[in-house]
Image (cartoon, rainbow, N blue to C red; front, side, top):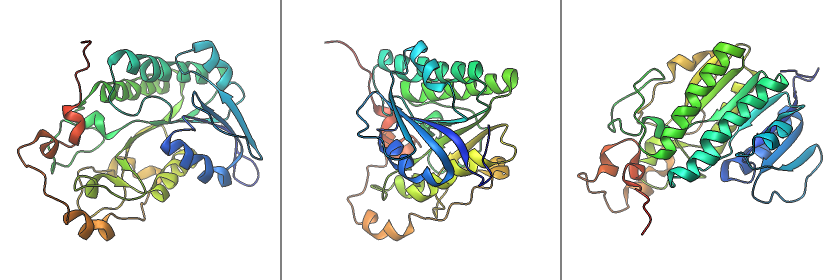
Length: 272
């Protein structure tokens, strides 16, 4: 990974740049890079100054290899972000992350920020506090794919020295939408700061960090990621009164018992 005299990265590859969080990071990471290569299968509009747009299907190994060439670091947000049939998850999330890391290995990219998910640990009970070394309990095919990505990134660090941060992102929206999100909410400002910390930490190694703001109630402990210097500034507390005025959730529902919320009940997907 190279930086300029102004402590900016050189060329940053941002996959999934047309998605909800990719769109946010496209705008907010610009001050920290010299140029951005933006990729998605969805339209990305016109490139602005210091941007390059490359349409790419993550399931296409050769295309991803070309996409990675010439980049100094990767923020990998691409892939399916909700529960879907396994075949869709396989193409975008499992083959896709493998192709990204293979491209990084082949072209000498030494730092990757990988969008993992809280759904890697979704079958832990709400109220229990988990750190980065907890038992993984994926709640969906989607969660399984992110767990695979965490293992893959560990392998590429141990064998090839590619540093990675796996972001177990909670619920990243302009504001929390329900009671669960009072705990899991990650503001856009804190997301940007988390990615920035991961890109510029002097020693990243292989780090798992929960993407969550400084909310009152906590299910996740980031003490094992203290070395990256992430200190969230926002909190879900200003939204509490509005959220708690909503109809209560049935406490017997699985979505109210497990950290993964409604994901623990998604699927299965079967042909008629």
